[in-house]
Amino acid sequence: MLVGALRSNGFEPQLLRESWSVGAAARAGGARAVVLDVEMSGLRPVEVLADLHRESPRTPVIALTSAEARDRTVSTLRASHDDYLVTPFPMEELLARLRLRLGDDRPTAQLYLRRGEVMVDTALEQVFVENKPVSLSRTEYAVVDALIRHPRGQAMSQDELVTRVWGGPPTSNIVEVYIGYLRRKLGAERIRTIRGRGYVLEG
Image 1 (cartoon, rainbow, N blue to C red):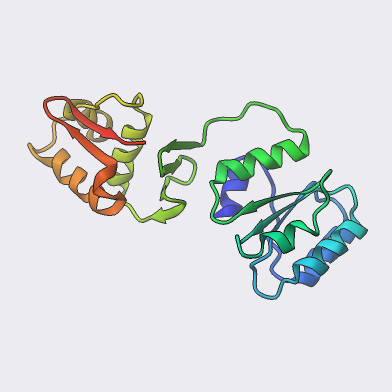
Image 2: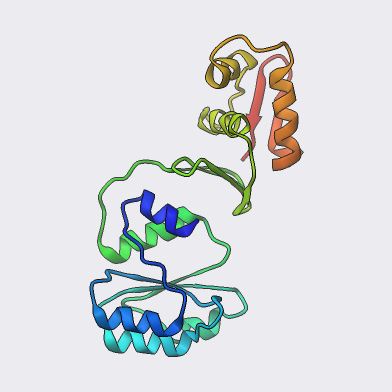
């Protein structure tokens, strides 16, 4: 998921799974930044970070760490070059920190839409609730995408949803059926019905 998100935002990530390969890649040069998941099996974060700092002193590192390992991880980072995120984290925050470290301030397309604890990755067509992926059908995804793009706090009517998602007149209760599906998957409290007006994705 992380590799796909980086690629969809213009990066060219290389996935490395072993501690020795991270150091070897740093020695080979060419990497503009390193995203280090300190929870990966087999990685020794203190040793890997020390190796990276020695072999590639100008390459910024963003460490992904659990809350429990945060203090130990942060103590090995360089304040002027490195950064960290505590897992789980919003993908757009990692992208923003990467661009900051790389000095990349170019405007980018809005690939991530958020409403409260619901986030939509428009590139991968994936929905997340509390940073966890939710399995949706294409039609369910289309309903969420329509609701999250609607102005915050304003109800989206059934007719508007029908036009956006189905492009024509559906059966009489199809909207209610799919809203029911989504409430079970996203949480009933996240989609509010405003009688006579439509539906609001809360956040």
